[in-house]
Image (cartoon, rainbow, N blue to C red):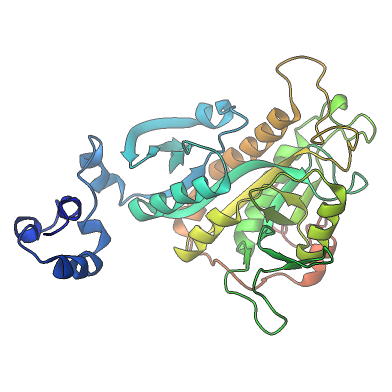
Amino acid sequence: MPDHGACRRLRDSALTGACRSLSPRLLAILLVVVPLHAVRASAEPSQPARAGSAMVPRIGVLIPNGPPDYRILMDAFTLQATEHIGPFTYRLGRIAHVPVVLVLPPADGPLMRSLAAQSMFEHYNIKAVIYPGTSGAHLGPGRMRIGDIVLGAKNVDFGNFFLSKSGEVHGGEFDTKAHHRPYQDLYLDPHLLGWLACSATRVAANTHIAHWANPRFPRTSPHIFYFGVQGTSTMWLANPAFIHKIHKSFGEMDEDGDWYSNLAATLYHVPFIEVSTISDSILEFPETPQGLPKPPEPGQSTSLIAQRISNHIAVDLIRRYGKQILAGSFTTPQQSPFPAAYFQKPKDPQKLLDGLDCH
């Protein structure tokens, strides 16, 4: 007998009526051949509005679950529709007259976010996606401190490695000197990085970092890592020796990037724009369990400080350059469009800001 669950999957296709009479073998073949859009489950209540909304070019925004502070994004956002697709809720609207779609996944973490991103790419006309987040420092306080801004010029998955018997970390579980897997390193289009750098410069110039966030290494305003290497895994590292091994192998400057969503975007040829602000540093606060300084009052945290900085940058980018992003055509590079030397001096903007008004 045919699989009735499979027949339900064909509910929206022209094969529905004949489904129950098919042999299991033929049904299995048809389930592979019929396009995915023809076998989706029945439409949810918001589905009828989706046909028109799917055609509108939009910028996607992936919102991290934590810290739960969404005011900056939502104050700038005008809601036009809410649509439910599977487990994800998408809010369609505008920021500064620029069409956007926001999604807050039902659970945190890069794997869940990447599924929300892929579903977004499947259902909407996404021209670029922005992820504003927080991250932990993988550079010492002489170079990187809480409140500093890391732009995702490059994104690496440092959770994919071979750990030798002697404890050495080698990037890429199955990589050799002669073979590197595709999609290993992901990069941001230089034009988009320039606009992101300009927005970060504007926000940093108007941001004051409280003294308690960096009491031993004072920093009153954020430094910007224009050529940042975002590091992604599903781990929170608080072991300085292991952080050093990871950094030696991958060159990442922070942790808690989103290589997974970047990968999904790259596969769909959608530019992935990531900005992270440093919220913790075990290298700056080695006496703490997780590299987090103690706030002076309840309700305050460096995570909130960092997320608000990233959110301000995302809103500024959309407000200033959203229309150009929607109208442009940009690359999703897997080979570096930047000289290697730029990553050795990541706080030097090089020519990124040339010709841009970043004040």
